[in-house]
Length: 287
Image 1 (tube, helix red, strand yellow):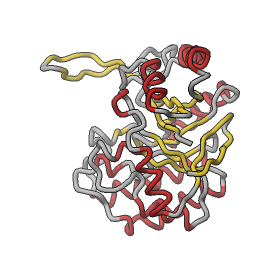
Image 2 (tube, rainbow, N blue to C red):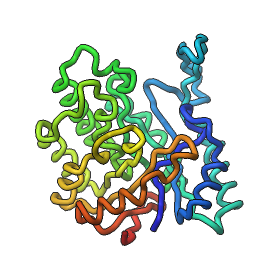
Image 3 (tube, rainbow, N blue to C red):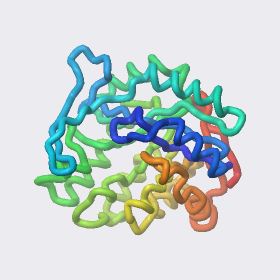
């Protein structure tokens, strides 16, 4: 099974790529299945129909100050477009309905409400954490004023706490995401191993999986994401549910290094199956 299970398009506010472009490129690359997982980040963003209005922020682009709209997926239009893509291209590729939940403990109820609304429509949900207490990682707001140990501890503690509260997801996305944005270098796995083990044990107990996020290659990380140590630990603890996704926000990154990830899983980690999902249920495929 050649599948990409972490794909963004213009329904995410950090992508301008039309959905149809991603579908056409996936077919050209020979993908058998793809899952769109556009962003929902309650706390720092709002839904397009939120009566409080949309959140905006100032930014500098090409030397000029611009106002950027921060909005979650327009769900009705998103799922309508996905259905249109299936009608147009379904004979060539399986297209699944997914979302990426950028969840925090303080936003759990909003995600519960969202999942309840679309539970019969969704095939797949990524549990991601892009911010804690509405402080984003990529801007360094979360890390500011903390030691490397403090912000890594707080990150994994927040994941575990939120997992205890929220169960309506499929896989944990890019579990060691902080490595992507850590200005002090990659924090040693051994220092967080106990916390990570508890996270993985809870995921396994709840029947959830983890993803291998192949954007680690174009971000220039020296290891997979999550790192090989986490993948080994997941396997050793009895974990079996894994998806692989490119996290592509542009067509040029679609399916990027998916096959490399398969090779690492099979030949280095000893994992011989990956999963796709239908109606929130995993389907196993031999690598």
